[in-house]
Length: 438
Image 1 (tube, rainbow, N blue to C red):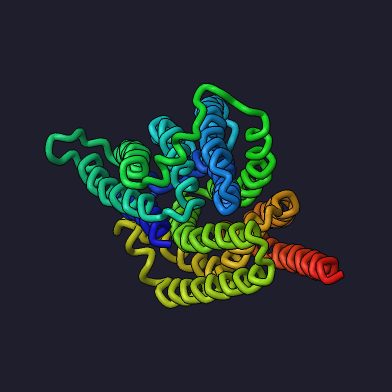
Image 2 (spheres, rainbow, N blue to C red):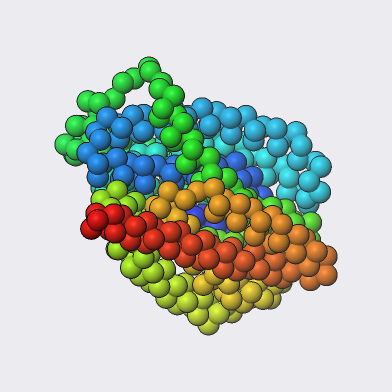
């Protein structure tokens, strides 16, 4: 949970510091981040499949499998990071066809050229993080994330303004600061895990470098691809929503980025609940303690819903004050747009929390494919078409109504799926118990 707060702070302060450079800077960063996250989100989704695999194998004391899943995940995601870096350069050539405001496209591409280099360190950091979390070692990623957040803020300040001999780079400095912070995160977590934890060094002895085994590749891809596609369908829809907002003008796009930053912050909190649910559920599943699964799942969903309700109420109550933290004085005409968007986004916070946690529970139950298709249907068949259609009539407000409807449909369908899976497990447990009595 506190690791997610550190990640939140990095994104939050990036946007706060860029906001004072004007609406053009915010809009440029919005588009650049949308492209970046649309590409990297599949890799992050792939890494989400690692904790249940690691937790399950560790509970079974299958030490070789734990080590080899980690190693093969590193290899697969390294290759994936190279593919993503290549794809971002395709965007540079295709950017004129996206019908975005011409006055920000050069800045967007300049920002993205720097940011895209961080594909590799961030993906590798997430592999180390998910590996350690699968072993219920959480403090290294917590410490490193917060250290990186502090360094990121300091570097933002120095690069944006050109203090202490650093070049004055404006908002491009934020991209350099983010890149350096992510490199530090990768180096830091790898050193801490190896030097401080005997359990990690124990598993290193089981690694076989320069060898790839089809068994582990298939196991990772079997769970990783559906998990990655789920994240791509969900987070990719938010990235596309930025392009829809961009067609409504710079003001709407800048306002959209502010609200995206707010809801991304709460979603990262929910991601903490989701990862916890995945690890706890997969561990109990491996130990065959089926009777605990539903209790754990419902408890985490309830806690997450309460947190999102509180966040929603805070956003609505402070909707008139929040924009002033992001917008400089001569851009105050954006504030009414932001306030209306905040209200719409707040209404759907609980739906966002429920679907985020439920997908984590289903990962722990080794259920990947159906949730993936639920995500595709909810966001790309329902949510995005509604966002596009309503944007023609209502501008940015319509975009957020479509997003909210997609989130709500997803949460309802995922809860239904969760109930079906749990009932099947309970039936299986009763069947086994009956056989044993006989």
